Length: 397
Image (cartoon, rainbow, N blue to C red; front, side, top):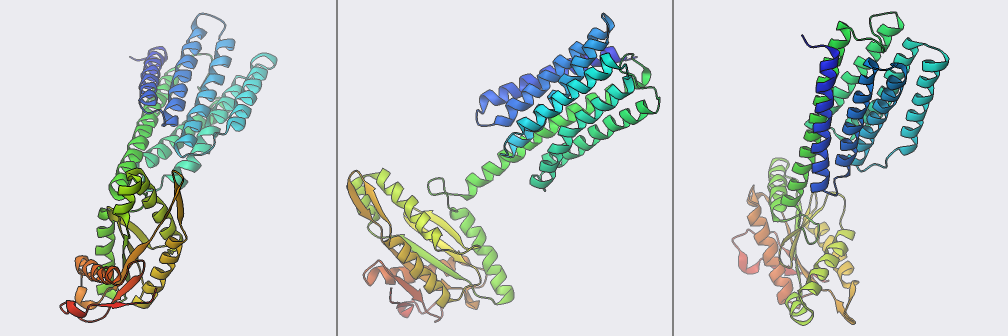
């Protein structure tokens, strides 16, 4: 049958393996700071368990005192890793206070007053504090994420086991820090399982973040940071379906930078890229919360304006024009000014659930704005889509 000594060896090997894995992850992904904290936590825990085994060959008081402090330090380091995972500042002072306080209190009851049960209580509580601190972040920032849910559940179970052990010990139960027992065998086995499950939850946390980053790459333009064509079309399908159901209008702006090819030819593509970034910032500064700016490709952009009429869309187009005209960019000692043409269209019942019809209407209005001198906007009138010949009306910019 397994005994505590055998399980402790298994636990040490497991912690070393976890530490090596997180070291590899940290070296492979230098920006993933949490991996370094989790690697340090696993290795510190392995050292603590190794030191605790010295109870079999020397006076157990000293190795258990040091080992208990190191376990508490490992919990603090792991909790700090969770903070870094969620881009929160690391609570070094709080962790240091917990470790130093536990070290002093455990030392007091180890040498000045041989209170074994008090040492067990202090150890369990101090080990639980950093875990409880990390639960706040896991619950608040990890809503809906499987890794965060698992980490929170396992963290609660670890705290529950610690507090249960402390309660049994204080009431004169079978728990002891000095001698192994069958109850401790079961307890260590449970803790081995929970620590492994907790690290598996961290792996799931990492996978969740990776999936979110991949989703961002699939939905956002990497040059300007605004939405890309995929996200735009998905949003338009939703808005068209909603508008058909409620008959509430929404508007669409189609924007095209004037003279962009000349900028690329005269100043180079790096200057063109910077113009696209500056234009995106200028346009976003005049949009409302809930509006979606997307880059369709090249120098063509689109703005989805929920719950917006054609008249309101034209007003927003005018504001975007004003912001764009105010941008002057210095490039290699020369000044570049931005100009754009905008087509404005509004969803109508005949568009139904087909966003390409709305885009076509805005494109016709954009063509009208280009034809009438550029650096302005035009609106698509309310005639049926089949009447393309008289589809656009020039609006004063």
